[in-house]
View 1: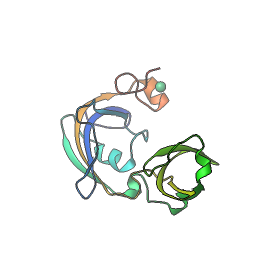
View 2: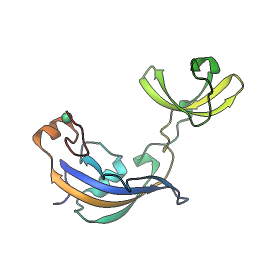
View 3: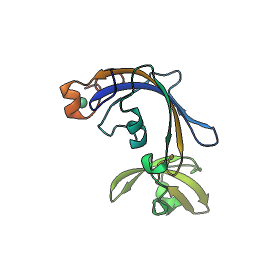
View 4: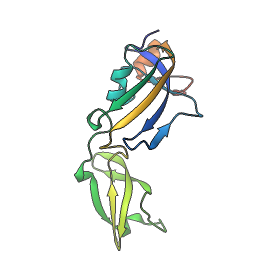
Length: 160
Ligand code: ZN
């Protein structure tokens, strides 16, 4: 069965950057399952999976525009160390949920300079060229309920 609108797709992947570093992989885990055409995964990958079939292997290059976006300078902010009350030691790489006008945002500590902490609200993969090695493990038709909810139920999906 070919991947089309409202297919439920399970695929294995290894994600590397242009330096060949592995950033993420489904190796040793269950394949990633998503509802095709519902914006569950990044646009550049979803587009390339269209029309593919079970067992197919493909290499997909995704630019930041079709991935996690460009790095936005305005999402880099300096906040006072006092904002991290109850945190004994603030170190680069730590992630916190920040409350912003646009709702909760996951931020990563970039550096700590005295009483000032530089945090980055960009997605960790923003601004990066992404290379996916994909192998399609399974394709099935979504149930009407899954289509209505916009996500997969059961194995690899939402349990409710
Ligand atoms: Zn649901």
